[in-house]
Length: 251
View 1 (cartoon, rainbow, N blue to C red):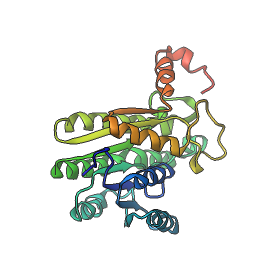
View 2: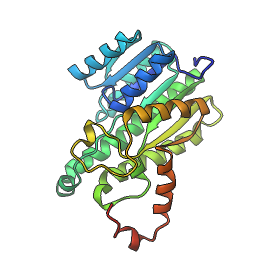
View 3: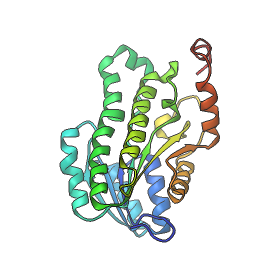
View 4: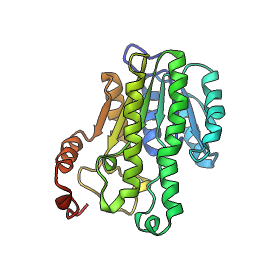
């Protein structure tokens, strides 16, 4: 259960090597979170991430999880919840893809969609059902400002995040009143390994800033969190522009 300050005692990170996921885990462990599950593909990076959190005093376990293998989600994630209640699930996996390459390679584009949307739908539903069964918990979903409106420069990635965002909002509505809280987080451009080499967008942020916003959103029981907050105003303004105008913008 959460403590008096709203900090989860147990955390499951789907995407156990995600920079945002690990920044959030470190922030929460520095507060009062004591048990952390890191779910991801087995790798030295996953074990290194677990070791770092253990050094902070957390009880950390890793579990094999692949977003592209939804048939295994029920079993692999079910084992985690069978060990005890999970106060917070952070759905943090996803891939950016390469827009130019993916337009020429439909199978590569499908991989982006399957990872960011199909895999998230499967894992999200499995975790939501488990949280509902235990009667409490938060499901935090990392969406993106890219999902607010498809842009020429990354519409494959953006469309996958748009689907994830709509799914998560609907899931939150479906779980309203059950004791399960769903929070959608929409970061702008995040300076990370995933975006290394890309031209930085205005209002860029960091994994640590996103982690801070997640913690604040949990405390406030927010349903939607923009990072930075002013990204929300900017995206809403872009959303009202006619399509003929929007497509001419350098986005």
